[in-house]
Image (cartoon, rainbow, N blue to C red):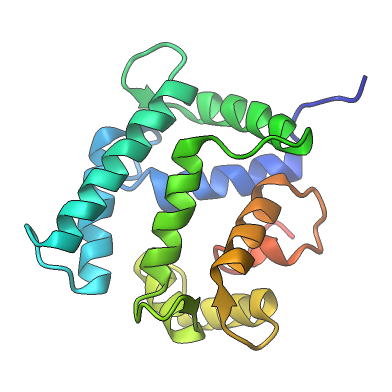
Length: 190
């Protein structure tokens, strides 16, 4: 039987996302308040008014994502997800995906949400400027964003199916040369 644990490379990638996108307040745990902070950050990036339709939809979506994440990952039910719980959840998710299953519903909602956030113009494609705007707000330099976008896009805009494939590749692939490794900026672990 094949070993279903994550490689060190996969762990580095998955922990990078833990800290970059989920642990918004950088306290080492994912909690509901991180999702509230994420709503504020995203709405600022997209110029969505607090209390407006888009803001409310983002808040509702991120609350659903938090509840789904908590259900899958919060083993000790303390209303927070530690790095260990996160890695354990991803070990199971990667194993399931490799066996033909899909991402859990909460993760699919997050992929959809992140595509919408990146597609600021609403034209169903992500261009380099949109990509850079989002990830600069998460602390990634403009040059890093530009290099990463060129790597993942091949010089063209990214469609939703392409974004979904890159997302899957980021989390599942153990190939250091995979384009998906650049989905959240130029990785420092390649």
